[in-house]
Length: 371
Ligand SMILES: [Zn+2]
Image (cartoon, rainbow, N blue to C red; front, side):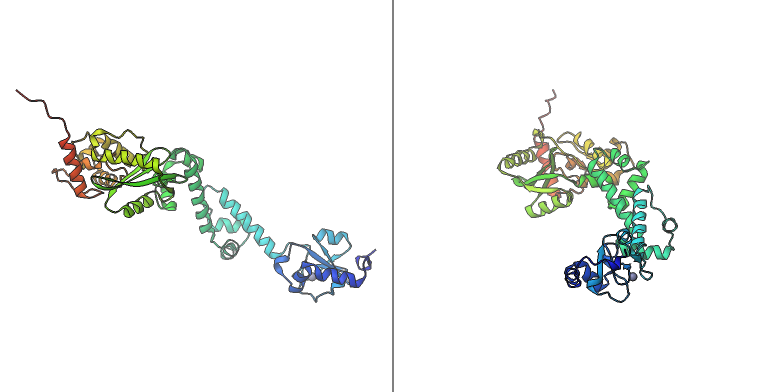
């Protein structure tokens, strides 16, 4: 029995059923987006078509819908010679090719060249560029860069250490990892992690003898002590330093901690008995650790500090690390002065540096009397 001869329903019923079917309106619109979703058979001709077929429209009472070409063939229909519903559409084929290229880029340790991608897809380079952009909205290069950035971020967010991160991200050497993350993320891996991915930070502003003091704390400890006159400016500074963290205003209990830190800023020699969360690059951490070894009331020059960390030529970088310090007084960058003893700069104002050094000097125990 041919499909055309199959008359299970009255023509009128069949017509109503077809017209009520959303697939029929796709056929009337010759909607190319519906290609691959279904095919329709025309009982009077025994031929089946894809929705976008340019042939003359069939009458609704003569149409049967099928999910696949195979189903239409099993029902006795032949494929139309114009729209070739038994073959994948050009759009579907291209989409599959681009999807395969995306998987190839995802899996490649290094970005394949445009020529390699074009050869793999069997397209010209020009054509590949155009089709890739049409389906993904990106050039192959942009796509690869975005994937790489995603991989780096995931690795840095999830790994415990930067060494773990570059192993997890499939980098053979730390050199390439550092170079690429600096290029792709716009900052070194150390700074990226310092910005506080997936971190919650509590903060509050209190008063001390030097003005306003903002104290911020992560799960690991105090991560920022910022000094200034304007609480809003301090909060902006905090947001910039921890651009990827979630900042939460501290509650009443937290204000007690702020008071403790304010007391410490007023009397640095008393020490701060709170855990610190020190975030920065490996080099910055070395400088900051060396700063914490300078006792209250004493000073060091930038050159001496550079010498102490074993990088005597890195005086400028040492000065930069001092300026990047987020933990005023707790990491005593105020104890670093110019080689001639001059005060030089201070992140939180030269007057505050002067006041801190003065009060530390005053609070030193009297030297034993010499007979
Ligand atoms: Zn057709």
